[in-house]
Length: 269
Image (cartoon, rainbow, N blue to C red):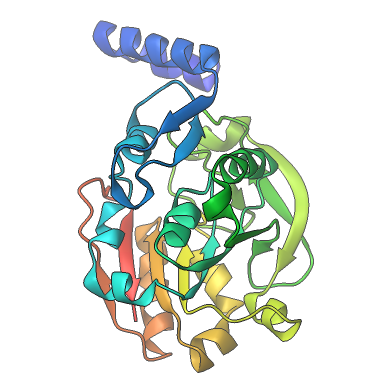
């Protein structure tokens, strides 16, 4: 019996019906453009599935990770800043940073996410002119690496991650994912080869936060960008805090009403 079937077998009738409905809605979902109704991207359009729930719903209403845009320090730094959006997904934050006056380098190694990102950039050309996309996965090494990727763009999160990440979900969730080879790169190497160091570094890399920052130690030591971090695992937080404090960073939790027991958002400066 497969993992999903086992979960259904142990479910109550109500949860079973809800699971079947969610699975059917995802299977029949089709992407289309929605106008953003609030927040920093008010009036922009995003290509999302027709399942308006979870993060997709928050993007449409303009409340997605809204605590970042309610923070006075972040809002003072963003105009005219260079931002790296590491794990840019469909580009919500990349577009929002641009709308607030920043220049953006968006890193998205999942090719399906990258294609959706391109659609969103093409749809919003005035914002897209301040955004440049790179497809490397930022990590602690400069070579080809294994990437565990999902093609489920209808769910709340694809959960795609590099090999070695401390992932937040149950291992059974990743059994349907594909293992592919992609290009890995250290942030410090990219800067040494001509990329400008960012003033703001937003990181959402599904448990590879420490690996990514280990490849950016020169950046942390000399430029000290403002960090906007989604930390995906309590064990990762245990290692991440002393690592950043060794570079003089002070960490504080962002006020996120959607945080989970195994995930939190951190602002570090």
